[in-house]
Length: 252
Image 1 (cartoon, rainbow, N blue to C red):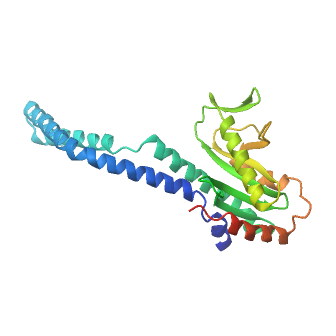
Image 2 (cartoon, rainbow, N blue to C red):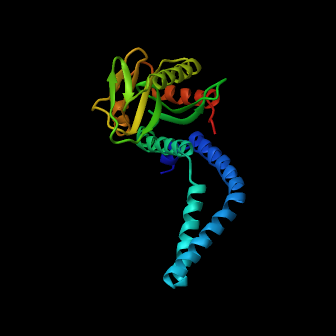
Image 3 (cartoon, rainbow, N blue to C red):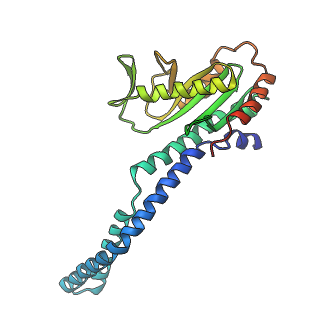
């Protein structure tokens, strides 16, 4: 079990930190607004409650109405923005990807190494997951595309999620994989693991940048099916892992 926990360590940490940072800034703004809004809300709720108690002749009905109105106002005032929710969803997706990959580490007896949430040198970007194994080096970017009604498909040589082109996102994934390749001094495949939206069985291949897009639950079997790269022995996997730990340190 220790190996399983270790193989998931750090997954989604940068995204979770960003979600907390954004939510913290939101809370501070909401607290400032609450200082002058809540007195008016309390007065309005009290007035409505008084009116209800007068109309019904039941004081507890007025109290209940006033309390409900006040709670609804608080909920609206302190609701979480879509931006922080998006980062939090992304962090959960990365942790789910880590759980899918964990069996490779503890069952592979050194044949596989998995590193999560790594810093790109001289950049603010981070690498979601790097997998090292018999297939060589693979960069896995996680996408939490949770809309069940939006299709992921290829059209006109580009990847689309619903009505939105993901070409820029796929180019970024390719760039991140190339940065890892430059640091590790070896070719790095680029893979996108999608949670939520359906992907055709076997995945999709984005022409031009060589990114493979597949359902996250298929990731482990996909990696095992990849052709073995010459020279990627257990020793090379572990040596490359140590190199990555130094040159691609944890982002969080």
